[in-house]
Length: 467
Ligand code: URP
Ligand code: ZN
Ligand code: ZN
Image (cartoon, rainbow, N blue to C red; front, side, top):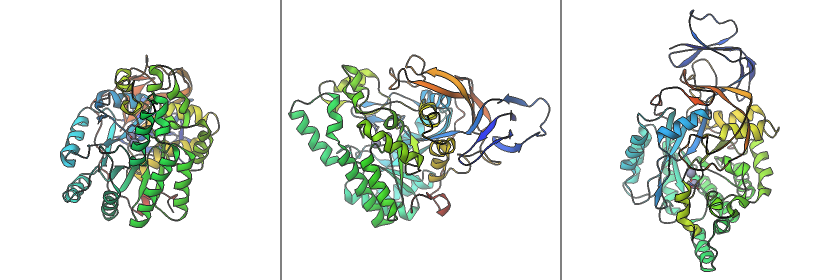
């Protein structure tokens, strides 16, 4: 199948220029002006539009048994929602609890995606226990093309690993050349603070943040960095939420620790006051790490602009209001998470690029290129170049709209960004040359998405910010 995209302005992490793109057999085969293409080739006229590489969300949850329930999305819904929002590749967290068998869990997670995804996908493998059988199982998973791990320093007795386990996981990761992504908090401190707050009758969602304060996230980040430094492994902090933790990460990188930082959409746009809203409203905004004081926003935006925060994901993790209400009498029982996979690109474009906080190149880098480089997908994904997969977002910067649960496509009955304005959205989205979305409407193949095998990092894919 061939496709010509003409008259658009190509924008990558480091270039901006006018050229046409020709796509054959799923890849970009020509970039230039006055291309010679066969008569009758399907054409998208991109006059007045920007053309970005397909965006990559490095942190989503789709299938997730968690806190006594399941996240609401399936690949059928999440992959379509992602594409409508311009995200052509997702990396899902495969998250068995510490009581499950890792290999069986990995197969289960893969089976949830196979033949059901409209966009391409890959996994980070959560290691929630390290015992004598773990090494062999994890080697098998890495050999299957899942070359990144995830650890939790939080969610006591469910996902969290202790320091001894973290040490062994990082040593193995270093040997295999895989990145370890980490949720950095202190499970023990969170658990103790939660119990104390509940005992004082502090049960509402507004107490979620005080139960896991910034110091607890800074401690987790520091401990993770110390273990990376000791083992020589390469790490990636997920969903960093505050300046205190960012400063710890920056200091670690300065002394040569191989550590990258991700933050996620909610922490740039929402703040702690949302969880204090009346009734069920507050419950919708419970996630971990929690929404922080708004005073953190300038540090996050400037850290992002400077590349200290390298990537922006979503931590997409939708629960319906009825599920959130499980915790109406105790904030510790509110399923943690918020949807976002559909809205990340448009909101970061609107609040980052349009406001001048973020250059258009850093925007592309943080939402696409950098994740591709860190996780072994580059240059197949994350850029516009001859030979790259034709994952392209023809972006209409003149579009104006308002976000709402009434019109979104994720499987959740609320949108945390309800009423937020967007200034721009994808006019067309292709996955390997197939047009999947036109003007907000999915019009493609629901089963087009493929599992992306990823190998461990090499020097070429290491973060330039990582010392
Ligand atoms: O609140 C969150 N973040 N829910 C999803 C699980 C996780 O910690 O990423
Ligand atoms: Zn997490
Ligand atoms: Zn997550």
